Amino acid sequence: MAINKYSVKVTPTAKSRVDSVDFSNIPFGKVISDHMFVADYDGKQWVNPRIEPFGAIEMTPANLALHYGQSIFEGMKATKFNGVPHLFRPEMHARRLNISAERMCMPTFPEDLFVQALEMLVELDSEWIPEIEGNSLYIRPVMFATDEYFGVHASEKYKLVIFTGPVGPYYAKPVSLWVEEVYTRAAQGGAGEAKCAGNYGPALLPAQRAKMAGYDQVMWMDAVEKKYVQEVGTMNLFFYMDGKIVTPATTGTILRGITRDTLTTLLKDWGYTVEDRLLSIAEIADAHGRGALHDCFGAGTAAVISHVSSITWRERRMELPPVDEQHREVSFRLKNHINRLRAGLESDEKYRWLHSCANSGVMELAGAQEMAG
Image (cartoon, rainbow, N blue to C red; front, side, top):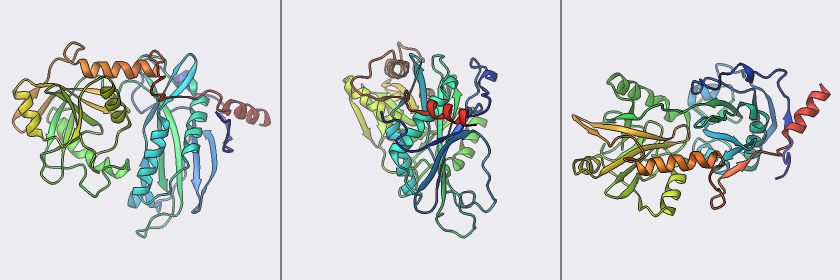
C-alpha cells in the first residue's frame, strides 16, 4: 500500500472527544468523530485535500446546492479486528459516488484518492470504532455545489467532505411494511439510481404517513403501473419464495446497492437460485397465500439486513414466518456471515472485500503536524 500517494495535509484535533462517548448506548447518526476529510473543486480540478477537526462549513444562502439540489452522498462502514480498522468494498463506493456525480452534472472524484482519504481518516479516528458486535463506524462522504448565485445552472465549484460517527444497529426490531400506491420514489429516466439528496426528501412524507398508520416503513411500487416492487424505505429488497431468492431488477429506478451485490454474490456461491427481475406485489401475495413466501428482508449499508415481519397491501396484511434462525435461514445466514467477515472471524480469501486501513501514513503526518505546532 502506498503511503500518502496524494499529498494530504493533516491537522489533528487538539483534544479528542472520544472519552465522552457511551459506546454501549449510541443513537444512530447523532455522534460524530473528531476529524473530517475535505477537498475542493476549483472549476478545473480537485485541490487542497486535507484532514482537519470536524466543524462547521461556512455557506451563503446563495449556495446552488440549497436551490437546485446538486448534492450526492455515500454510506459505508468500518470495523476493527486485531487492532486494525478495515473498510468493506471501498472501491465500489468510490465508483458509485462517481456514477451519482455524473448523473447530477457534477465532477467525478479520483477513486484512488477517495480510498486513500478513507484509509487515512478511519485510521486517525480508529478509537471511535466500536468493538461491540453489530456496531461499527459509519462513514458519510458528501459532495455538493458551492457556487454562489441563484440562476438555474450547474455549479462550477464543489466540495467533498467525508466524516464518520460510531453507530449501533439501524433497526432494533423487524419492520412492518405498507405498500405505497399513491406516492412514488422514482420514475424511469429520473435519478432513482443516483444516491442524491433529492431522492430522500420526497420520501419523508410517505414514510411519516406509514408510521402514523402503525407501520415502520413503505414498500415502493413502480411509478407507472404501481404494481412492481421497487425498494423498501432506503433499502433494496429480497424475497425467499418458492425455493428461490428474488430481488427487484435495477432498471434505472433502484439504487444499485453494494450490500445487494454482496448478498447476491454470496447466495449464488452457496448454491441458491437468485432471480434479478421484475416482481409484482400480486405475485408476492400469491406466494404468501400458498405458504411459499418464506422470508423477506431489506438490504443496505446502515442495517446490513433488516427482517420484515409483515407486508400490508390495501386491506390484506401478510404476516411472515417468525424472525428466528430456524424460520429465516437465508437472511440469518447472510447477516451472520457478513458480520463475522467484518469482525475478522470469517475468511475473506475468496472475495477480498475487506480493505485494511493500517499503514496509511496518517499517524506519521499527524505526529509531524503536532510537533510543528
